[in-house]
Length: 393
Image (cartoon, rainbow, N blue to C red; front, side, top):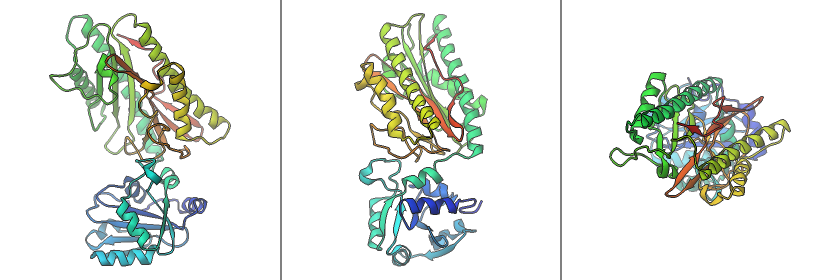
């Protein structure tokens, strides 16, 4: 694959006109800007800085170090080599002087996953006579959308993960019922073995938390200090995987209760979390039906209102969801008006998690996580059958 192969330059020109900006200036060094490498289709390099100008009018231009020119073989435009920093600066000044360029920046770091270009690089570009604006709308359109192959892989991973989660939670309950110790690390290992059998890959073992440990959203069980399952415990299992490295992962959280009848508090929290999840999806479907735009911030608000109205607002301590692309926490729009204010429009082709949670310190936590892909025919939820009732094991 050559750089920018299949890139939609007509769509770029239209979006640059709406910003307005003269060009998209892509920058990367050692992989700090995944949006740049994904758009360009360049991999396996990055030990030297590069800039690529994608102009509204004219041909693309790349500034690349002389020892890394091979990565730009087949580039559909001009490649200007540099070696010394003085050459880079001179070339950059000639390339961007007097232009308004879009880059992966987020004013006041409002959206960290978009804020990929270091401050010093922005200074360098501005010192070259350019004005820098945010490329958020470009990242959504060209870096965050899933390909048909990625969507197919995500669907397969999502159904496999759901089956693995349910079977693992039921196994834990069965072991407890027959008097066998079940530890959080043991549940992790069982999931990892199941991933291997299913042909799935992941970058980290799942989160398995029992009772009070489930109240820590990013809990990591450790052998020797992990908890043993007991009757009356809440079980949280958060697991993510894909069909191959670099594919679009599926990311889900499933909940269970070790017993026949959970307490009223557990039920109230579960119902609030499930209601928040469903309210987020309902807003997405309503806006799609009306052909109205919606932002990640608005979806976060919809979910958060449900949990606040149930009296648990102070215990919902993270955003409702994150962008998913080739990175599990991607560069596209996040479902967030809490940790950050993501006002980017959710566009067809992007995907993200919906995962509201309530975490009662020293007691228990409950989260329900699904994924949503915005297809041309509306929001598609994965897995096909999200959890509706607390699993009793």
